[in-house]
Amino acid sequence: MTIAVQLAYLLASILFIVGIKLLGKTKDARRGNMLSAVGMLVAIVATLITLNILSFVEIFVCMLVGGAIGLYYAKKVEMTQIPEMVALFNGFGGLASLAVALSDHFLKTSVLSIEIDAVNSISIIASVLIGGVTFTGSIVAWLKLNGKVSGQPITFKGQHLLNLALLISFLVVSVFTFLYQGDPMYITILVVMALLVGILIVIPIGGADMPVVISLLNSYSGMAACATGFILNNNVLIVAGSLVGASGIILTQIMCKAMNRSLTNVLLGGFGQTVATGAADGPSIVIKEIGVEETAMLFDSVSSVIVVPGYGMAVAQAQHVIRELMEQCEKRGIDFKFAIHPVAGRMPGHMNVLLAEANISYDKLIEMEAINDEFANTDLVLIVGANDVVNPAARTNPQSPIFGMPILNADKAKTVIVSKRSMGKGYAGVENELFGYPNCLMLFGDAKQTITKVVSEMKEMG
Amino acid sequence: MTLESLIILIYVLVLASYLGFELITKVPPTLHTPLMSGSNAISGITIVGALIATSELGFGTLSKWLGMIALILATINVVGGYAVTDRMLKMFKKK
Image: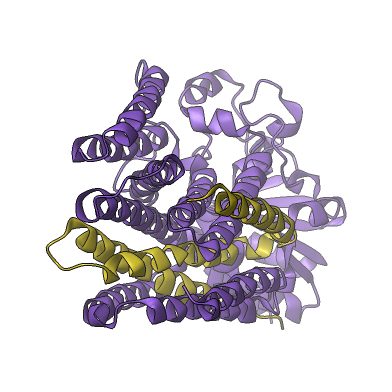
């Protein structure tokens, strides 16, 4: 490989790093993403230069097909479906790494008939394992997120034992794969086992924990690229792969912390199954209702409002009408903000994207730590489609499954209005004691419809 | 692979991971979704491996076909990932 190509790979690595750095500032983020895309283009062009020109036809056909599919999906996808898309793309990345590893294995064993050394063999096997797990794990996560498969955790007896047995057999077959390289049977068994492990580790994890799973699979897709870098002795793959690997791990940690769960606890799965029954015995809650007109009058009389949005808001498509509510309030000089819990939405930062889409300025979106002390001095809090993240039981009730989870102090506000379809439970399946608090009022009905009515009442008031 | 080149690869792995941790911790939660889809696109770097795998040999080999599958998937990953990230970031506005 020529020096020029190596330097191009170095340039690509630098562009990825600078790109990610710029992604840390809202005003530079778009430029950062562009730089990273340029880095990718540089890496692709540099690689093409080293290749046999005769194969360019099929290369361009494949890239045209892949590019068209990718572009179409990126343009079509709804912002509520971004988690599904990321899950699916993680899976594609994993499968691509697996296919490259297999291709290299067969090239060396059956075409070139050369011995694969130990390091190379380990890299190939690692790429097959991580790539395979990423692929099927992501597909299961994708199916759970888009509702094609129930979000309920699927558990059975001896599940962990089976996983352990699979892992041990994987190691044993790996040794055979290295020793009997000419026999394609062993590597095929490895592929099948890796795919199976991916399914088995994601099915016991409940829908509420999907943000953690997507972050983790994101990390795996990076690690798979890294392993491929070791096969091909290529630095740019290792740099890019480890950046993604690190990013996924950090996001996983943030998500776990926001739910007060350890990663092991999430991965072992089954959360939300046992709690549902236990909570039913608790004291029943006496609630107070509020109507649309009273709500509008209340909004008219206050001087500060914080909205706590949850995924339910996006499901009801209420974000646009909440922007109208914001406009009505701002016309009256009312201070209007949004409090964003780290696990609001279905992946890290998802709620911010949903509100940005509704044309809400990002400086209105305040993180939990920054806004939690403000609730006590706030006149009115409107909770839309959020539940567990405002449940005071996380602070007060050691028996509650969500005890210890950091929550938004919405209950500390003078008045709290909860816009909710009915008295259903949150994702974690626990009763919310906030609804029984003396300062809490329930605004029942579809969030979009009721808030639309509130807004038109406010417009009439002028 | 010689031991020396392996050591260099491990150097790169360790340093780049450390750099990644340092960079990502500074990204604010507001941008975590674009960060994830953007880094998802970066993980499509495996496209380099897919290109190499596709370019070798004729259509009679399994290696070639695996390379072509990898190339299609990695391109979806790269193009879709960058495009959707750009679409999201375009919406982040300050008034």
